[in-house]
Each structure stands twice: as structure tokens, then as C-alpha cells.
Length: 245
Image (tube, rainbow, N blue to C red):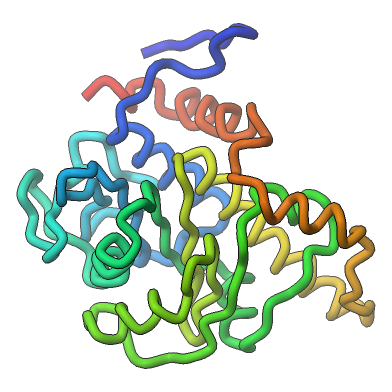
């Protein structure tokens, strides 16, 4: 497949399975690449979820590999098993059925701040884009392949859109693949930049005005139109037959 963007149309029409694959691949490039770890779900609204499969890396899955699971984690469509830690998503979608997209992984800088039990401030505007409320779930009750531990983590997250999970990684929610992508990229930048500033001896006192920070936090992740689209086109240039399944 070849696609040439125009000012009116930046992407080809994408099915949810294709968006899930492209979200996984674009985030892999951004550091969400902890081997086989990580899950992405899309809520179909009928008691089932689309999900990336276990046993395949995020940068090698294709639309035909995406599985459909029920809220008990059973595979109802597809040829691959469900990821081991999927109870985190199952409990999320049970407790918060209005969440459309969810992504969990262990990117380096986000995981380090989660391990430290700290939420770094956004030190620049790029680290803020995507918005949403970020919280620290500063309790490790065990691996999230256990339903009770997974449910507790979701309960502690409350109504937030992003979480640093202590001793674990990050959890990012959104109303679209675009929103999750922007939020995940910005969160990792936020954690990376704060790490560099602290290591250089700088103070983590955000220069961003409080009014700007409140405005950004209240956004739905859809505001930076074109960013997600550009990263998707990069994937399609690298693998022009990706959507030909």
C-alpha cells in the first residue's frame, strides 16, 4: 500500500486493529520496548477488547496478529495467546468502561521515576503535550497478572489519565490512539528531561506558568493534530505493506 498525504487527509482510513498495530510500533520507537512486555487494548463496547498478542514484539505485530479477548481474558478471536499481564487492562475496563484505549509498558525513564516513587514536573512544553491527569500509584501489591493486584492498582489510579506504577512502569489512557500516543510520548519526555536536569545539578522547578499547566492537564490529548499522523506515516514508509493483510 502506498499513501501520499494531502493537507486535507494526513492518513489513510484506519481500522481499530490497524491503529493498535501502529500505536505499538510508533511507541516502540519512542522507548516503549521492554522486550515482550506491554499491552494495548481497545474497548469494542460489547464486552470484548482488541489486544496485542503475547509472544510477538511490538515492532513486529501486524493487523492479522491482533486478538480479541473478553473481560475474563479469554481469547475469542485470533491465533495468539493474551499477554500475561492483561488483568491490569481487564480490571481497568471493568471499573472504567468509558475508557476507549489503554497502554501499559516499561519505558526506561518513566519506569525509573515510578521506581523512585516520584512524579517529575513538566519542565518544558513538549513534556506537557497530551494533557491528562498524572498520578503516582505508590504501592506495589504484586505483579498485575494477578487480578487482585491489578484491581488495586486501578483503584488507586482513580480517575486519572496517566499513572506511574511504583516498581513497575507506566499506564496511559485516552479516547483515541492519537491521544494515547501523544500522552505516552510526552510522559516519557517529561521523565527523561527531568532526569537529565537533576543529573546536571539543576532544580526541578518548572518554569511553565501554573495557568498553562492547568490548561494542558485539562486537555484530552487530541490538540496536537498532525503529530500522531506524522509518526504513523513514518511506519508506513518503513513497512509499506503493513496494512495489506
